Picture (cartoon, rainbow, N blue to C red):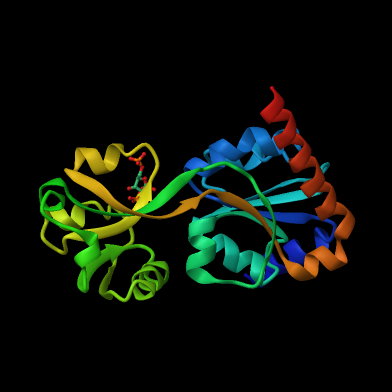
Length: 229
Ligand code: PRP
């Protein structure tokens, strides 16, 4: 571990470290970042490596769980990263968020079984139980409406909770709506739109402004070019 730190900090001083989230977003971000001169193909080879460098470009890439990206960037273990608005609002970290990348667009909603929704009216809720990966956002949402909420924190496959009687409602992300549909659930309230953002460590922005601002500018230009295409 000590040796690893030494290698990463001393021999690679000029490297800019980019934290990338595992999963769908990584593929969506690939083209946009490549167009902006940040080609992370080197980390996408399926060889279980968690970190890889493109020495010529002076870039080091790491792939981690989406929830961990803001943590690495806030502490400066990574200089920049890609993080969803959902993860950023859930954890409220001290980061610079210069750019909405417009990828990974989806919505956060409240959903319940279709059968229940036929006789249920969210306007009458006073106390509910909700399963979610987002306890903080969920609590804020319902408190603002004066609804008392009991939250069951889960880590995935949230749509399963109402099917097995864990609770009747869930708060989760919806992209195509297919997962809700296949599990007999319907959306009953919209909480917010979600997409992925570029995030930067505040100190890195001061110590390496040219490199980071350069990436921000090239990403903006690539997004503009994509819109026009
Ligand atoms: C996400 C989300 C929903 C699903 C929505 O889950 O939590 O379950 O995608 O997509 P859809 O509206 O296009 O069907 P993800 O695949 O990330 O896995 P998870 O449930 O284990 O979090």
